[in-house]
Image 1 (cartoon, rainbow, N blue to C red):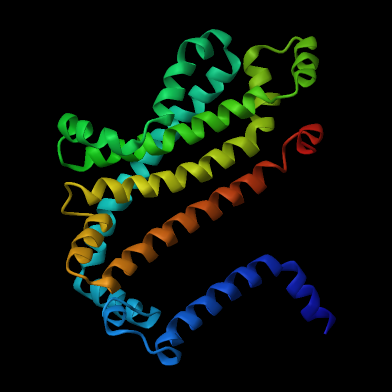
Image 2: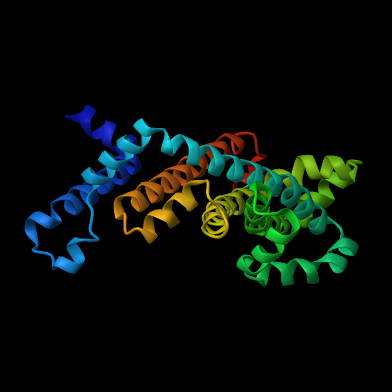
Length: 266
């Protein structure tokens, strides 16, 4: 009995999370058995078993693989570009008053502008191919990461910086020893937001002017009232978001092991 209790306590968050998902799917599956749905609703209502069957059918036909490759490429490249740009620019703006004064108005204005308004211009500039979708993903993901990194750098304890500088540390050493470890929680929070924005960018970009990709598949299915196909796309996007978010959380837990003790207590 003690072993069962210890097993549960060690994995409580995972057990509760998975258990609630299973409960939700079971309730969803049996709703049509418990409730007599109106005909107009039942025509557009689906269940997890029907979604799973449609997923298998699309997999067997090779449809999912074709669309998934396009969406995955847009997501990975767009998110990668946002990390390559947002992370260093956040560090630079946080450490340089001159760069902060010069670029902060543009960052604020661009972040406040809905990404959707850029889509027509991106299609004009990059065409209706994959690069216009990659750029909308990039624009959606770069600012959460940049702004959170900037906030992390700005909130670094000045006492720690001055202490490191008193030992003759250069700017690079200050960045490596104090700024980056102290900013890890902010960077991770920004990356988690960026993942969600990147997935949203893929869907929005493919809804308009695309014939390939999971978003385009969902849009075509919705126009034909194929609810189960739409939910297949939703489930895949949710799975991608969950996998990447859990990966980021795992990376964060590994990084906190080597952070200085005074920083870890933040």
